[in-house]
Figure 1 (cartoon, rainbow, N blue to C red):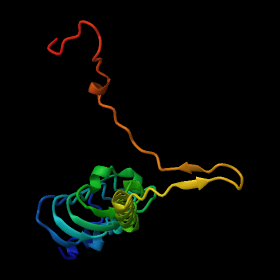
Figure 2 (cartoon, rainbow, N blue to C red; figure 1 turned 180 degrees about the vertical axis):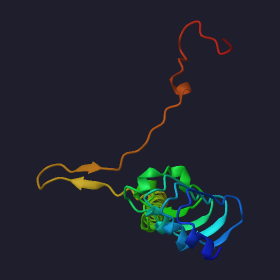
Figure 3 (cartoon, rainbow, N blue to C red; figure 1 turned 30 degrees about the horizontal axis):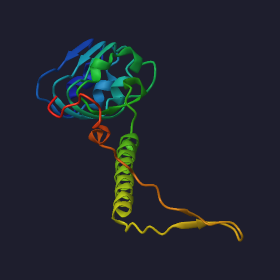
Length: 183
């Protein structure tokens, strides 16, 4: 879509609807010079560039540029607050405070980097814990007693604690009267 002499002469136009016309290219700068325009619909095309020139039109109350390839920041001013957020839907590269979409990719990139770092830290921590368990399980069990005693006192020998598991059949009564093995 290129500049047209028609739009230079149509300064008193109140309504412009070019929706669904498969238009490509930048939005013509002449659209920003339409002083009386109140309703501009450019949605569902393949327009590119920014919408800054349109935002400065004081009479424009309805603007729909949704589903195009527009880029840039929607400025935070009185003009932009007149339009609904739906006016800009389908333009993922438009951003701005008013759209609740911060400009720049730094926040998204930072979140991804933090997430990757967290995953890497958790994986390394788990690997260290696993290695510690394997070393403890594979270490030879030498039962060198520890001696604690002073000169003139009897020596006390300490050994590492041992796990004792009792089976319930070990406590089975065997010498009670009337007890039979097949009961």
